[in-house]
Length: 260
Image (cartoon, rainbow, N blue to C red; front, side, top):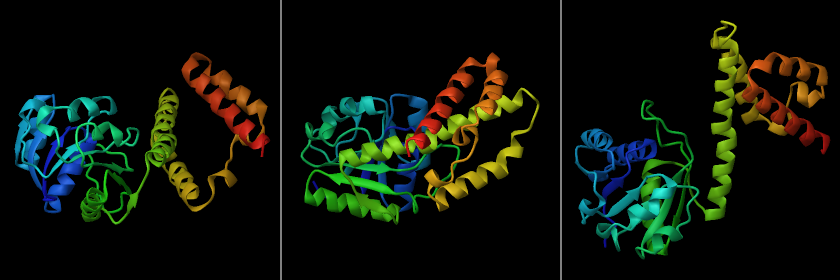
């Protein structure tokens, strides 16, 4: 089993979409796309100029790499497909250990990109931190070389480290985006354009990256301003979900700094 540049991408979601296109741009050769959804497989295959299948039993057997970019719960099921037995398997999930692949092959790895992806937005891999782990020295070196063609930031990682990275990413990406969505809903009710928040969001992210976020927390919860918090909760009385979230996060901020 050589370390060539041909690959099959198993999964046509956001990560699989961007990873496979990035690899093709760097000279890797896509042989096939697998997805259980024919329309998604067909669309990505058209971009990659390769074949596709919706059946793991029909995955081509002669690729150098089989990159599994499916939901965490589906990784083991996909890896268990007969054509993938004893092939070089790599999954892209932070929250799944390498061991889930070692049951099916001796040469396997993890390549976790620390980034949020959407098919509708083009993104460069060059600045994306890629965290890798390999089952053996040869696989790790080859996987590292592949990752280095995509990004200037390639790091070895353990499963525990990737879990920590993923938890932190949920806090600073997924939760933040959810809070922004909630904020947009609040002002929409008052017919206020959300564009007025762009300077605030830009300054918030700038300061969070330049300084220690612990030192620059502001707002009524940080000040212990219970009167303002009560007024805000009163305003949210017809939106119990947002009120619950506001109350919980305010308590978290207050308790965090009270214990400093």
